[in-house]
Image (cartoon, rainbow, N blue to C red; front, side, top):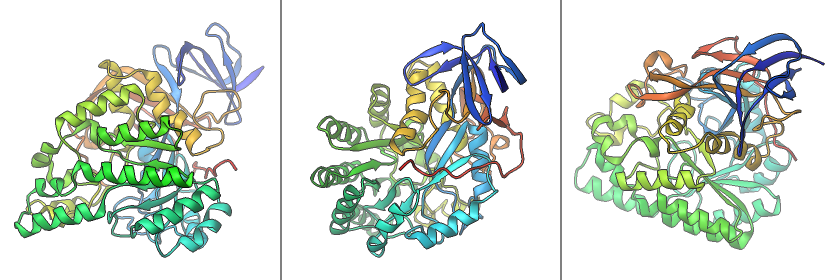
Length: 451
C-alpha cells in the first residue's frame, strides 16, 4: 500500500463522532483511513499532531459579482477567501450580470470561472416572473444546485416573485424533483415600514434596521412553507435571522414538509444596536434583531434547528459604504464573511456552545446531502480529499491582513476567535496554510449536482 500523501497524528471529526486516525490521499481522493498506529508509504507525510481534521467547509451562499461588478468581488479573490477560511467548496448565487435565469446566462458565468479559482464550486440558478418558462431547461439540462427566488425586493439586479409565480414555480420544482432557495421576507411589510421611515425624514442607521421587522420574515416563511406543503416542493430558506422562523421551519420538517434552514454568522455575532456603531458596514438583509433573539438563535443552533451555515458573502467597495454614513438609505446591502465562517463556529465550540460534530454537520455534511454534491462533505474512502486542519488552541484577532477577499474591510475586524483553520486541502492539494495561499489560481473545479 502506498499513498501520495499521508496526514498523521490528527483527530478526525465527522457529523456524529470523533476519533484518532491517519488519512491516506491518492489521486486527489481519500484512499485510506487508518488506525493512529498504522502508517503506510507515502510521497509526503503531513504531521498534524494535536490538531483536528474535519471535512472541508461548503458555503452554499456566496455572491462574487462575477461577471459584472467585479470591483466588489470576483471569482479569484472570493475563492481565495474560501481557501484561507477553510471552505473547500462554495456555491455561487446567480445574482450578478447577467443574472443566471437560463442556459445562455449560465454558460456565460461558467465560461468566466474556468482556471480562475482556488477551491471547488457549484452554481445556483435563478427564477423571476420573466424566466419561469426557462426554468425546466435550466434545471434539467444543467447541474445547478438550486433555483433561487426572492419573495421581496432585495437585490438591485433581480426581481422578486409574487405569490402566483412562487406557487407555479414550486409546482414546477416539485415536478422536477428540484430544490428552490427562497429569500423569505414580506415585501408589502417592508415597503410599509420604509415609507414610515422616509415620511419621518429618518436617515439614521437604525431606521433601516427597523424597516425590516422580524415578523415580516416569519410570515413569509410560513406562507412559503404552506405552498411547499401543498405542492410537495423542496425549499431551502437562506439567511434565517429570527428564532421564530427557525421554529416554524423545524415544525414543518417534523410534519414531513421538505424544508431546510440556513443561517449566517452575522445573526450570532451582532445585534440591532450594533447598527449605531457600524452603520452601513452592517447593512444587509434580512437584518439583525435584538439580543433576546440572538440568544434564542444560539440555543436553537445547538439543538439542530439550523441545517446549514452560510456566509452570505456580499462585499462592496468601502467608498460605497462610506457615502452612506449620514444616510443609511444610500448604502447597498451586503457584507463580507467567508474568512471567519469557521472561526466563529470553532470559537463557539471552545466556549461550550457547540460541539465539533455540530460544526461538521452544519458546514459540510448537510450541504453535501441537501445540494447533492458528489464526493463532498465527508472524510470517507473514495470521497474527494477536501480536508481542513483546525487548531482549536489558536487564538487571534481578525485583522485586515487576514482578508483575501477583494475589498479589505469587514465588521469582524478586531474580533478575537479561539479556533482557526490552519491548513486547507482541496482534492488533496494544500491550497492554504496559516492564512496564506499556497498555490496559484486555477485549481478550482466545477461540481455538478448528482442526478
